[in-house]
Image 1 (cartoon, rainbow, N blue to C red):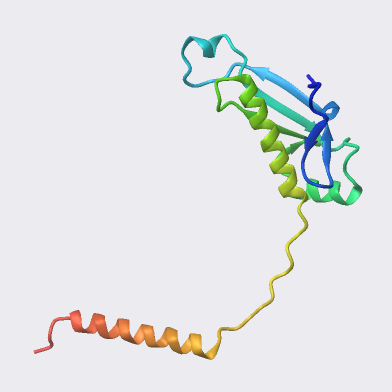
Image 2 (tube, rainbow, N blue to C red; image 1 turned 45 degrees about the horizontal axis):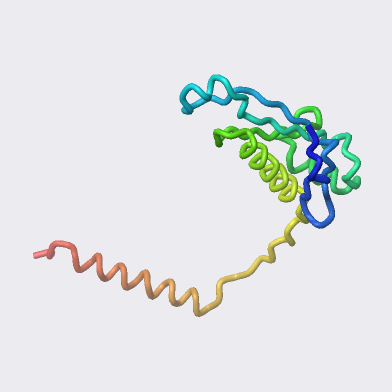
Amino acid sequence: MPAAHRSGLRVDSRVTIPESELTWRFSRSSGPGGQGVNTTDSRVELMWDAASSAVLSPLLRERLFDRLRGRLAAGVLTITASEHRAQKQNRDAARARLAKVVADALAPPSPPRRATKPSRGSKERRLTAKKQRTDVKRLRRRPLD
């Protein structure tokens, strides 16, 4: 169901998923809601076929598949939203969640950690604090009479 007022789902400055690549499915939501829960299809499933998407470069596609390996089924990412009672709110929640998941997966890797050693001052402060703690606990003991 492409919306006329939306050109696509903007993930970040590099990637915007066109509405034509998004597939929607609606079903009845579980949980509280009274009689309305049995009659309205408020649960939303938003599916995006990342494997055949035209908006991803080979590098971004590889990064996405590597980071979302457990969430992809045959190259399709599925997001479910049923926390709201209204279908429109669930649609917006699913869109926002899909954008966040994809943006997090496409983010460049963080630089590797540089190994460091504790400074001499920090070692001395740690040992001094341990000695003070030992003295406090020693004073709590029973006297050795």
